[in-house]
Length: 397
Image 1 (cartoon, rainbow, N blue to C red):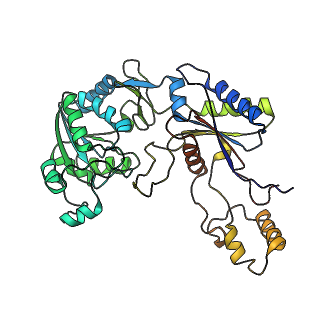
Image 2 (image 1 turned 180 degrees about the horizontal axis):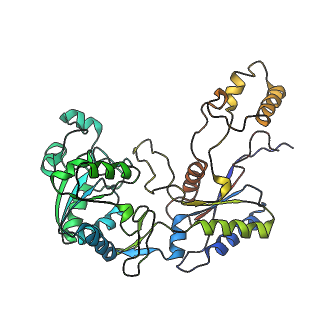
Image 3 (image 1 turned 90 degrees about the horizontal axis):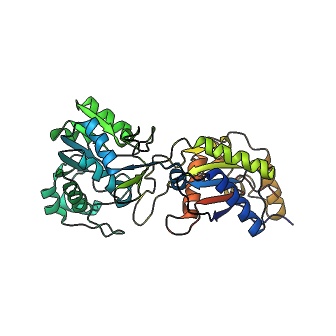
């Protein structure tokens, strides 16, 4: 019988991971046990993925609020620090801000508006239009913002992040001033010591500030990029990709993951004779159509993956073929014609009309997004994902 199922994504349950656990063994065992229990086999080119959270936990890659404060003080001087373009998040940024504020005398917090970088809105575009505010050029003080827009709460969390961040800074022992602007250079009217907290636009933000004469510019990727008092760190991303662990401790983005994914690949080949691909994934890269939130608060979707996951899809658009090249065919003849076209497709379809409408994104971003949606971010207990059939097409039986 012809195959009737294409891609399958399974969330695999695993034990609660603790520091020092042998994650390569745990992941290998969990995948094999799940396959045996559910009655399916491991295949060549399956994808085994694990969330970055369990990797960092196994590594013990943590730091404290006091570690952050010490690093900020050492790098930015401990005086007035401009903290610009943070995302609005209790889990992602609030605890980082606590450490930053403990390492400064005063924090001038500059929030982008109407939303942060990943789409959390302070106000709506309609509200800006109504009030005649141009977010590209207007710089607002906290008093002006409140007079114009009042006390807006996030539609999903119910938090007024402006008030929340202001109180957090003061509770951490620093003076707080809040402004709203989208040109990073606006902060230089308040201080020339700046910490850039944006994620995906950080290189441009730093470049603009340095060109405008800022005396001291760092990014979150440069805070906790080396151990402080024996802490964890992330040499490449610093505080980017971190999450709150406790009220005083932060779990950093995992480091040195390449050895792990290759070791899991090796162990599964040894156990099954099958060559699987392995990756570590964080946030997926997709946008919520209602809340307008772009999920990707991590610096990358995947910090490590095996070689077979490099590149982008090379696919033909079946509906294009059916509606154009083979519009005169139907039934079995149409199926066979499309299958033949797939078998002889070019190795690189970029720019070809027959691939128009296929997703021009990296495989790791696509698969990582699928993994993130499969595992969820709450209490499913499935931090490992096993994907089968992702690289199959209409010709595979």
